[in-house]
Amino acid sequence: MQLAAVAVMSEAAETTNHAERVVYAKNVLNGSASISEVAIGVLTNATIKVHLAALTDYTDDLAFVVQSMFNAFAGVSL
Image (cartoon, rainbow, N blue to C red; front, side, top):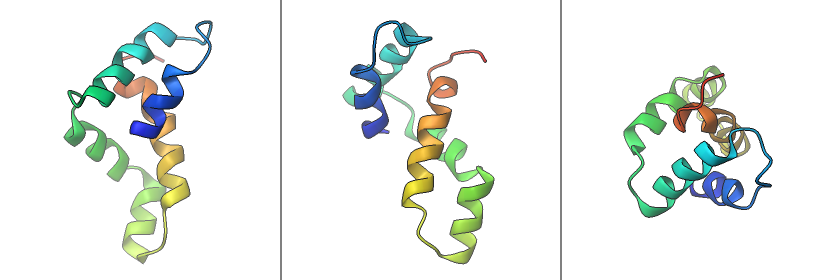
């Protein structure tokens, strides 16, 4: 989450939903974001579940899932 938060902090201000994403990124970076909320969201992703069941490396997929879900965690409606 920290890597995604840092990326959000450096994205262009014109990025869609940037203001909401920055608020959440700051919460992640200062430790006030709900880690359990993120964990549940990530662990219920189908790709991550397959990796966990097979005991295979999911590092790249984990980063992709976290970045993909960042708007949802930030409360941005799709």
